[in-house]
Image 1 (cartoon, one colour):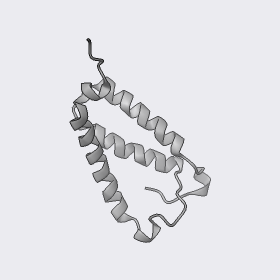
Image 2 (spheres, one colour):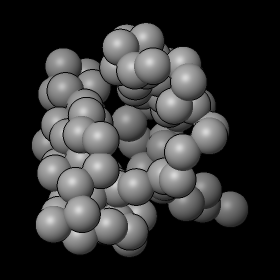
Image 3 (cartoon, rainbow, N blue to C red):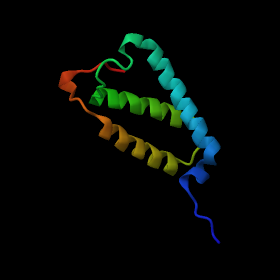
Image 4 (tube, rainbow, N blue to C red):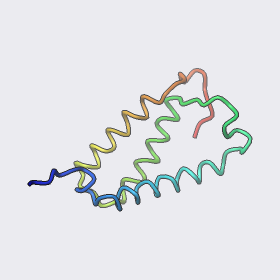
Length: 99
């Protein structure tokens, strides 16, 4: 039986996915250390267009140095972009805390 070729297998399997998650988590942890601990979990969560763009910059910074075929990087980044767009919940006029 022919095994289907998946994006995960093509970019390096579970090890590569785990590596990307760790790299992204490390970048986010640096950002979170800069925020006041009092804000964690107690204030309403806002995600403005500026914050969405900042998250995409973090994601892009993680994907850029990793050796993944360009077409797969583009497809993955496109999926991440769609996800962050769906997570926006505050118009820019209401200005949440920016990243």
